[in-house]
Image (cartoon, rainbow, N blue to C red):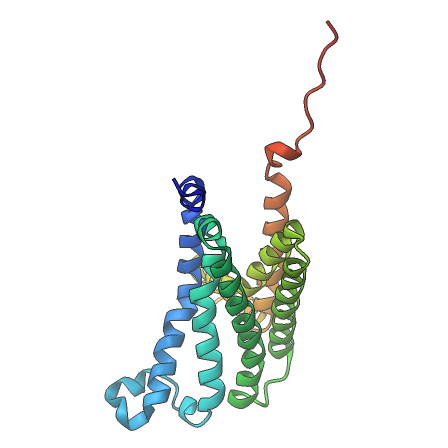
Length: 237
């Protein structure tokens, strides 16, 4: 049997991780593809479907298209990086998709700030600062992960790539944070108004801190590979 094919068959597919990432990134990724398609078709050509998106998008189409296409490319390419079978079968393909993921992630983060400026230029308060923090975190983590990949430091590359994914998920986590607030807190209460205001302004930063904390706990509890564990001391006979 060919060595590459044998490595492919023996490699752990990590399908649970890949599937989970596709599910999570599909939440913003699929609507982004739809919005980009509607904006490119225009308000007239898209017919009644154009009523489903913000009419302002047609006046600021460039920022919408750049952000939407980069987000779609990130959604398609990033989960593949966690497939060990792809790594075993074609390291070249893994590198190519990794470059696509990094470039699309940074473009998505920067264009997100650009889109905020063209859609809500007067909102430069806490919500805007939160967006800046998360965008910088995404770019920084992906760039550092790429640096370690170039240096062949796979251990640190894996750590920083995990941080980069956690940072990217900070724009999705707020959707799950809003669920318990809407379900368990009385809608007319002062607490509900306070939590809604806090999540509106700081949801991305809260999600970023929560994601990175969960990642740190997971990595601390994750058992070390067998090759890195200390051998048990042998008792003298």
